[in-house]
Length: 358
Image 1 (cartoon, rainbow, N blue to C red):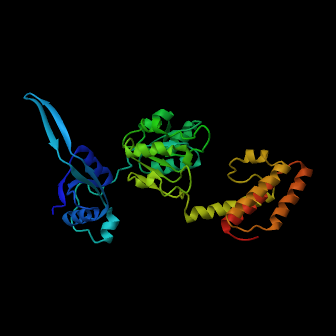
Image 2 (image 1 turned 45 degrees about the vertical axis):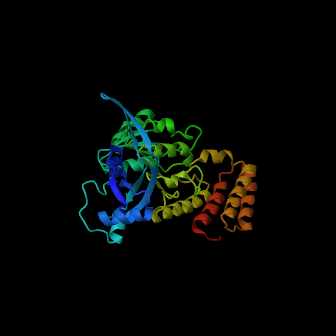
Image 3 (image 1 turned 180 degrees about the horizontal axis):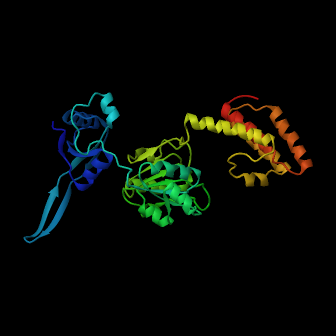
């Protein structure tokens, strides 16, 4: 039985082979996925990672020619889309047997591509420094434009949101989740992006409308996406993202390096010391808000909430910690200030990082 009848060499199929390392064949209707996989591996000396099959029913075609109306009938057939494994698997399976074709196992150059950074905060600026080394054109959109001096230093250029989404080859999101940014990347935006562009989100999941993104990826409205964050975490096993080939998923580990975790712990300790001295903490995100809620009564409630979070994480917390918080709250009533509440927040946070008991 001839399993592979012929390859499909349409424009769409060629594009799939160049961008996603997937190849399309007309195959025998009785062939299953295992047989198709073995046939491709045997004939081409490659390693197949995935096979998808589709059966198309017979259809009639009508053409209007100089000789009149002509009707033809196309029989049913089976199509297989075969994804070829990348280099690592080929070597591991000892399939490295031949010279590759001109467009086998190719990626995309970053050099000369336009990177659009949505949100030029600390992380956005750090990304710009890294991208500059790859000789990328870097544009950004932010609530406030940074100074021309800093723009020149970073090698970035300010642009409108609309120009950022239409001109970028890669869009990297670095904004907080607010009412303003909630699902700001939706189908309306995806349709304005380049068909070959990639969307990367390492900020907050709800900034992207996931239902619209699934459709955009399925219909090839955009080239692909990389997500480290999601609307609901962890995502369900039944999430449609799992069925897509043009998306890379990560379990919210964008900052997960040994060095970063060590720095986070060190900053926590420094904040603990600063809190004991009644000084402002390092990287005090939302510090103004916490000062507002740090009135004696609300401070105590906040500490209790933090302790409950620790409970949910299955960390034991001591009565001494809560007693300290209560004593400090009483002191704050007398002082009419309560910035020292941060000491206790750091105390609990420190135990969370180090998983130790005080």
